[in-house]
Length: 347
Image (cartoon, rainbow, N blue to C red; front, side, top):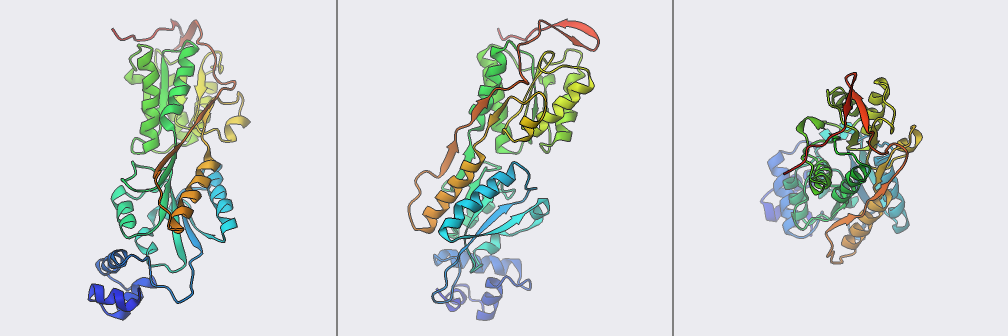
């Protein structure tokens, strides 16, 4: 395919098509969309010079590269290097404002992409797929569209193991500091929290449920503080991730509560921060580095022209029990008065 082919397909001039392919700003959005759609219909990402081979993989991670995202990015980079592919990194919270997906099909230096927890809606991801551009979504933020390659962890089963562990320790009044409701992981982990309670015949108490907009230490502290200040406080807290669980530990310490003697606290992810605190966190281990390697494997198959049958890959999670969870206390103190533990049972 040549620039002339695209121009003929769209009815635009060769100069206009060239401006789109070179990423120039002086192109109307609808014109850019016509060119990219035509390229998808013609079955190519972009015209390339004879003998030219794209060696770049666009890695989009529009978040701070902390110990969570940093592990994934490092694993992807290391897995690509032996194949002669270079990472073109788009990272940082400010990158969430970048509208980069529509321009990817016009870049001659990009062979494919890996998108980590992409904030773009599913319809936009589907349009990119329909243009024939190879990419993999790693840790989908929303349910991935059909026929779109995605890699994630088993959030539901991990959260279910964690809550079941607390129930086995005798806890029934279990609070949750949940993550963003519009994140797929948040919904799946919340469902995993509810399932063991139902199995034990316990109705979840609405006052024990909190959700946050961003899973940070600060917001985890705030959610935990609200739960621990209830007249009939929980005997255990489940946090969306380890950072929020650290915030819960701080809230417990401020109220003179011992962990796990007075309160059990658990997280999710198994990042190093959870092992550096005291007591060390009981959590659910996500295979973050293996998720990055699996995303590279799927992308390499696409770039090699191979059929990818397992489009939605979910990797197992593992419960890791440490010192922050223990048996439910026979008597615990809420608001200065002795309150005996009880659960709300279904009849």
